[in-house]
Image 1 (spheres, helix red, strand yellow):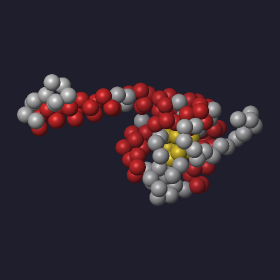
Image 2: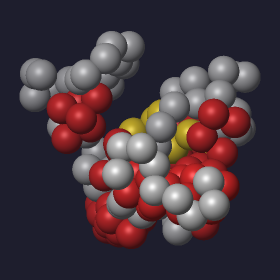
Image 3: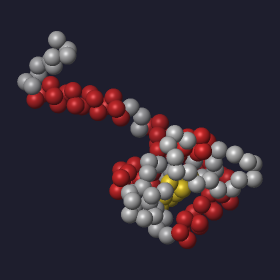
Image 4: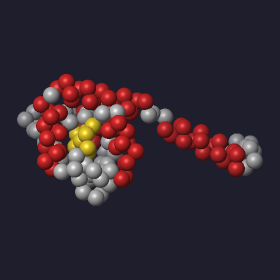
Length: 137
C-alpha cells in the first residue's frame, strides 16, 4: 500500500490480517446497519482498537466481551464513528493500550475448539451410558 494512503475499504476474503497489520484502527463493518456485523477478533488479535456499530447480532458475545474488556468502542451513527476513530488516531497511547487489551482478550479465549470437543465428547459419553464410541474401540 502507498505510504500516503489513509483509508482502505476491503470487501474480500483472505486479506484482512494483512490489512489489519498495516492499520492503526479498525472499523468492523456490517454493523451500522442491520446486517449483523463481522468478527472483531481478527482485528483484536493484531492489536488494533476496534470500532463497530450497534448491529452485532452475528457476534453478540464477542462484541459484549470486547466492550467489557475495553478493547473497542461501539457506535450508533456515522458521527460517533468519526469521533471514536479520530480519538484513536489522535492518541497513540489510547490506541496502544486498547490494542493490547484486545490482544489479551484473544489470548485468554484461545482453545475454544478443544473445550467444545471435550464438552461434546463428555456429553455423548453420558448419553451413551458412558460407553466408548465405535471410533475409540
